[in-house]
Length: 312
Image (tube, rainbow, N blue to C red; front, side):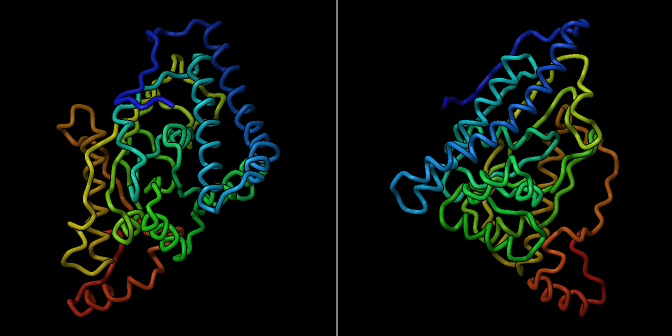
């Protein structure tokens, strides 16, 4: 796998003819089929064979993650070479460090594929439904990825992984970004970072034109080839937010900082934050909503005469 400061895979972008559009539509459908088949091959053939090799639990886990990373890399290359998309990855060499928490916005269904494809041994918080999907449940279980099942235990499991020196990928929005809206983060990611991360590294992802959002089925492809850009931002030191405040308050401050970093970085021109106003209301799926660490902050702010909200 390449180790360069920038991975660039592009062709000149031209408006599609009818034949080109039909080709990309078929290639997009083939990408979904191959992804499912690849998951079955991993689950039924490759991963069981890797399990027969000697080694301790950490070595076996690392082999599984390497295999998934390679499979995702081949999948990205198929999408590129079949003209479904082009992509640029800036700063890839700074990803994959011990104890590093990688956070990313989530504009498209394939964001995690790009990240895992270029990080050979990364843990990831993934949605619970992947444990029920016959194409993915075997690989995610054997790779020991973390299920975003909404429980407070998930926070500690993720923090433990970081303290062990694993690299952890997190999408703080918890779902795909609404097109033309600024990202809105749940505070669970900030809480995990403050518990266990040695460093937080943002990755800014843009997909132009938009595709595979929550509002777009796979067959509604754009008129021209999609361009995916992944840009690694400056590291953020979590200890600066952890020094003088209880964990819930520090989490809120870090979360606000992260959102502002993304609002700035993803705004065209990096000058005018012209995003529409976004209201972040509490979600039952946010494990911080019921986490016991909130009790202290609730009591403190109640004494100050104002209600506590984790989404201020």
